Image (tube, rainbow, N blue to C red; front, side, top):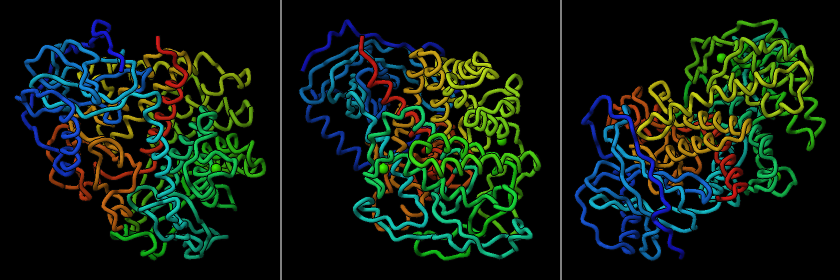
Length: 600
Ligand SMILES: [Ca+2]
Ligand SMILES: [Ca+2]
C-alpha cells in the first residue's frame, strides 16, 4: 500500500480555551466492553508495542471516512507531541501530524485537540496512534463509507411498520407477527362530529410506529415523512437504485418511496372527509407494557383535530404529490387535493392547539405556535401548485429561519423553496430564499468553528433527542451547500455526523448495529420484548442531555456525557422516526457529495 508523505499533512489546531471545569468523568462503555476488547485485540496484533500511560480514548467516527472527505479525530490530553495514522493491515505509518493545544468543551469533562488527517487518500483500514494513549478504534477510509448505514437507517422504518408481519426474508432475526391493524380505531369523544360519533369506528391502517411506543402521531410522522421525501426529491439518482430488501423491492419504484408511502397511506386516513381537518394522533389511552406488536390489543383512539396536524399534513401531502407524480399520478392528485382541504380547514381554524384529554397519557406532541406551520404548508402548496396566493401567505419578508424539529417547521419551508428555486413563479424572491438558507447555515458553521470538538452543538441543542438536533443542523448545512456550492458546509455536516458516530465523549456510535460500540439496550419495545440480543438495527438513539427525566443512574451530569445505554433511559436512549429521518437525509447527501468529488 502506498505510503503517504507525512509532510503533506496538515493539523488543525484547537484555539479557544476551556471555560469551566468538571471532574465528573465516568466509564460509559461498560455495557459493550466485549465488543471493545475484541476490536482492541485485533488492532494490537498488527501494531508495535506502545507504552500506555492513560486510558483516555481517542474519539473518532467509528465507521470511518470518505476518501474525498474531511477526517478528524479528537486527542485527549497527553504529553505526546505527535499523532500518527497507521495502516492497520501492515503497521506502516501513513500520516503524521502535530498535536495542538488541547481545549475544553463546556459539555464534556476532558479537553481535546483536533487531529486532522483529511489528506489521507488511500482506501484502507487505519488506526490513529498517540504515544501513551490506547490506539484508536480501527476505521475505514473508502469512497462511500456510509452507504450501508444509509440503507439501514431507512430500513429501520420498515421494522417499525404497523399492520404488517415482518417476514424472515426481509427482517432476518427481527421477523415478527403483524400488530395493530388499526382497521377499527375508535373516535375519541374529543374527535366526535355529527358524521363520526364518539366511539364509532374508522379504518386507519398502516403507518409507522412513532418511536419506542406503538402510537402514530401526525406532526412527528409528518416531519419524518417530509424529510424522507426531500431526500428523494434532492437525490433522485442515488435513491432510484437503492434496494432495501423490503416487500416492495423490485417493483420499479424507489424503495425509499415505497417505504415513505407506507406512512403517507396512513396519514391520508387521518383527514376527516367531512371538513378536511386532520386528527392529531392515533394511540391507546395509555402506553402499553413491554410487549411485541401482536401481543397488545388495547383499543386505539383517534384524538381531536388541530391546526398543527392539519398544516403539517397539508405540507407533507403537497410535497408527496410532487414526488409521487411520475409513479402514481392519480394518488398524487388526490394528495394535492387533500393538502388544499387541510389548508382551508387551518385557515378557518387557525388557533386550535392539541389539548391532551384527561383520559389519555400517550405522547402529547403539543404545539401552540402555528406561524411556522403556516409558512411551511404555504411554501409546499406554492411549489406544487404555482399559485401565487400561497406565496403571499408565506409572508417571506417577515418569516425567519430555524433548525427544524417536530414543532418548528420554518427550516423545511426554506429548504423546499431553495430546492425548487429554478421552477418558481415570478412572485418568489429567490435571493431572499437563498439568504434565509445561508444565514442559518453560517450561524451553525460559526458555532462549530468555536467548539473544541469542532461540532456545532451548544447548550440549547442538548435536549431530548439531541442526536436528532445534530442531524437536523447538518441537514440545514447541506441546504447552504446546495445553494452556493461552498464545501465548508459539507465539512460541517460531516463533523456532526462524526459526532453521532463516535466523535463524542460518551464513546458510543449512536446508531444500533453500526460502529465499534453501538447502543445495545435502546428504549424500543420491539427490541426489548423480542428474544434477540441485538436491538433492531439502524436506529439513532436520542442522545445525551442533562434533563435525566427518567431518574436513571447517569454517569455524568454534563450535557454531552449524560447518556445511558439502558432501557430505563427513555430520555436519552429512545429511538424515533423523526431522529432517523435527518440521518437518512445527511448520509445520502454526503454520499452523493463524495461520489461527485474529485480529490485535488
Ligand atoms: Ca421498490
Ligand atoms: Ca410550530
